[in-house]
Length: 162
Image (cartoon, rainbow, N blue to C red; front, side, top):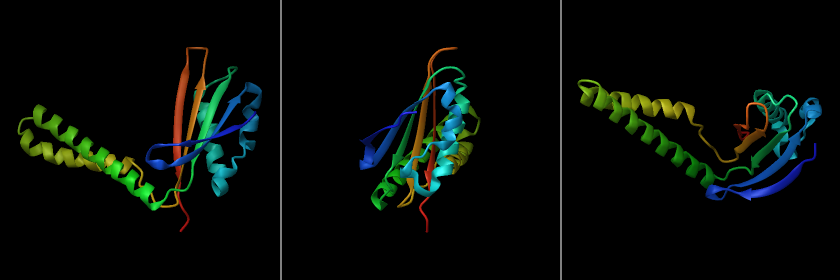
């Protein structure tokens, strides 16, 4: 596997190192040996994420193009911005839940706000909270052939020590 590195500046000014590589069927066993020095102490967790995503793709005898994006450690401003975005999504989810219930159920004007709050909590439980020093890792995989093009992604947050 030949690794190619590039740099990308994403939304909110967060910089990412992007590592591109193609996994051939004969390289599958070498995925565990993949070393991405940007991940530092979380090397094994990131390797597991890459291998799990490759296995999920069921690429078999086809080439699988993979990309791993590793952010620089988040600053306090970056974390605050991402957390504000998290709250906006949770608030939108609450509005959608509440409005849908209010229109469908009898006495929806009572149950709408209750289920809206439940939708808000549901979204907050599933959306991550970011802190200064956290590193975002995203893995993207694509394979062509068989039943058609396949695409899958996975991500994780490497929490800051402290």
